[in-house]
Amino acid sequence: MDDLVVAPGVVIPARELAWSAARASGPGGQNVNKVSSKVDLRFDLEGSIALPPEVKARVRAKAGASRLDADGRVLIVSQLTRDQKRNLEDAREKLAALVRGAMVVPKKRKKTTPSRGAKERRLGEKKRRAETKRGRQSRGDD
Image (cartoon, rainbow, N blue to C red; front, side):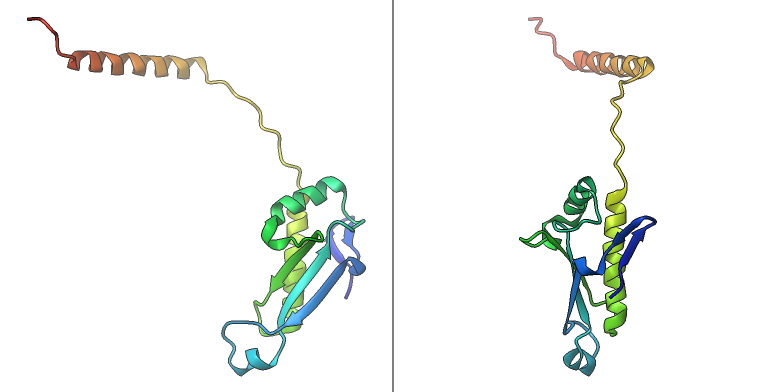
């Protein structure tokens, strides 16, 4: 297996990736029962030297508990096609997309305040609503 090029300058060495094949589920007739076409690709995230710690943390968050095992490895499964080789390429592309998404630094949220006009409109609407409700009250004049 070759090294996985995620982005220019970011390469995951092949030694950090491990894959295994198993029998896939779903349609495919006799082929499903005979051929191990499903691919499980494992990436040792914790032991990786290819990614900086902040990217590892974002990969961990994006992958979620369902794709991470107890040893800190990311598990990517592909059983899209009937061909093991194409499933391996699909799994590698899924992993690359996950890491590429984690490389993007999220923007900081800027606090905003309502504009003066928005405040005035809100207060005007509150006054109209209060006036409407005040008009519904019954007077206790006996």
